[in-house]
Each structure stands twice: as C-alpha cells, then as structure tokens.
Image (tube, rainbow, N blue to C red; front, side, top):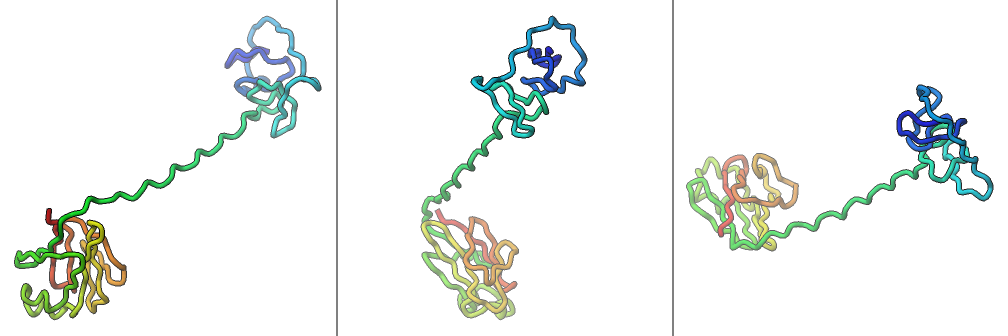
Length: 190
C-alpha cells in the first residue's frame, strides 16, 4: 500500500507506514498500482524488532509496521557545556568612599571604619548609631568588598542588609548605609 502522506510503498498487511508512521488503516485509499509486497524478514535478513510490540520490521523502517511506534533510538542528551571560567577583573588603582559632606576617603587593601572615623564627617546624632568598628572595606585582586563587622545597627548595601552575610562585592556607585545613619558612596579611582 502506498502511503498517501510520504509516498512510500508499504507491504499490504502494514497497519502503519514504515517511513512516516501514518496509520494506514484510516488513510484514504489511493489508487496506486499494486506493487509486489517485499518479503517479510527471514532469519538471515537484517531486521529490527519494535521496542513496544516486538514485531520484526525491515532494518530501514523508521516506524513499526504493526503498532506505529518509532524505531529510532532515543536522542542522546547533549551534555551541558562546562561552566564558564570566572571573569577576572583588571586590577584597579584604588577605591574611595565619598562621605556625606563630599570628602573622599581612600581605601587600600583593608580599611575598617567606625564611629571615630565617621564622627568628623557626620552629625553626632547620626554617629551614635555607628559601632566602634562598624564595617570593613577590602580589596582582593582588584575587586573591592564590604563586610559588616558585627555592628549593633547593621550595614546596608544598596538598601539590602548585609549584617552576618560575609563580604559583599562592591561596584562603582554602590551606596553603603552605615547603621541607618551615615550614607557612603563607593567609587573606583582610576
């Protein structure tokens, strides 16, 4: 029987097309010249058994003649590519903290700030919320970090509390709020 969908000549007793899997029992009959039925596979002929119904099919079949199941092996999952190597930032020359009055405070490899450091730049009412050793700003291979040093009133980075969160990476323009009282802006000095 000639498949009306793909045109493959199938044996007359096939229920499904060997090539496209179309259900031949419901396909409209097409006037075609009767083709001699290919011989069923025999012991010495290459064949593939259907994984669903175990019916023997010619080796070049894509779908089972009996049940229409796919005879193609399941596609192997493509392994995920390895994770990308971490981006290494070019070393910078330094970082600065811009204090509320516009004063710039240079930060080197490690700078701890507290009440005494900020008292000269903020009102006494503001610095009373700042711990003696409130936060640390550090640099590691050109990348700057801020860490709350177990302060009483916490530290926020861009509005997010970082107390007990370990060190957090800083970017140019980040806002650091010390004890909900003193706002610092981090800048990268080129």
